[in-house]
Image (cartoon, rainbow, N blue to C red; front, side):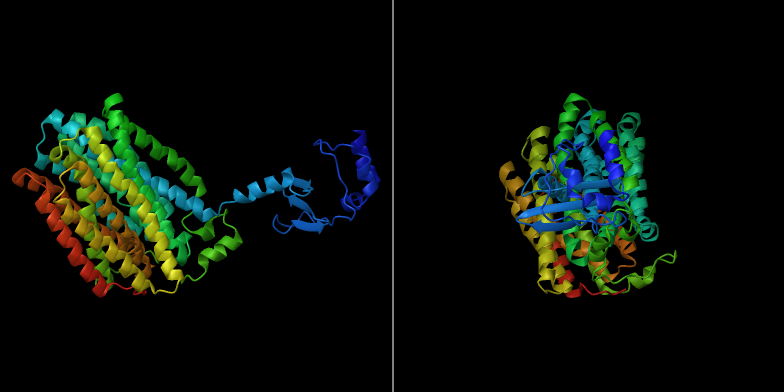
Length: 513
């Protein structure tokens, strides 16, 4: 108390007290137990009304660095003397100052991981369910495709909702509903086949909003030269969901039972919602956490599209241009090949090479893991080419050509695989190269129609979903009738090649709408 009274009595204001060296010298230790060392020159203290960035002043004096900081919570005065502990704390604080857009894309990557993990659970669980209920290979294809029945309807509607209400709100409702459907799946399977198909269709209905929401959020939160990398990170989470689902589901099936993986992933979805609801906005301009400098970076080089007027986007106009059809056909081909491998890969290894379910899960997981890495590499490469001066049209065509020609060649070679290791290696190459499509048609929607990107994504995704339904069911009938996967793999490879030609003829990186 005596020290406190001495502080108040020495001077009527803080600045005069601080400039008085004698008052500080007589205190051996401060209340924080630091021994003061007084510089030979006075320190200039700034007003506390200034912001934290403005209130930092550094005065170099004889090789020593003095830092003064003022915050809204109170006055913090630290003297950092040549590489002391204070300097380390300041550096650590600066490192933890992560830009808000990176936090947003991390949350999006997490939910995309859950999105795909929830799908894959059924791809593995369907094997013991088929044994339990005596399902044929053709009926297995129907069960696998039931997810897509709802997915095909929600893609267009979900895309339009994203354009109108923003990605945050639509994504939140989607996660809540698909987590509920995931939780109900084991109950529905035990109740009846009709109930199982209905719940899986509802699950697909909820998940249909995920990709349009992700695409729109990435375009809003990232500058043009970082957008491919942002989508690469988000889709890396999406593909890692395959790995997590394929590896965890057999373990939980053998230890907890069929309900185990469904309960786990639905709980994770609800947990994610608690962070998403309060930490993210659809547009960085509405976020209280974004600094002015980061907002300027995000907005730099962007052409603001007109605000949505609440009317339904012009479907006839969108379908009247060849670049729109290039995106639609690319999505059809991408989903055709993707869902064939996603739905049938564990069964392929189990039936063709006679490996057990756990081994099949490991062989199936490796390609998806490498796809997550290659997807980010594709995004970073795309951004680098754009920054190097290449046009968007050239970059999109290069990325998409790799994403289709590479998988086509790999699937043709898969017909000659004699061991599961060789087959896994070829599938790894196919899926790794197909991830370059993320920097092709998936980004091209924002290039040609920024105002209607969500709706255009929904149209393309619905067409792709219809193709996925046909390919998923068709694979089952091919396997049942012909006893092999080879014929269907050849058809898929041919589709990749034809679409690559169409893309290079009609795709563009220029704004069309």
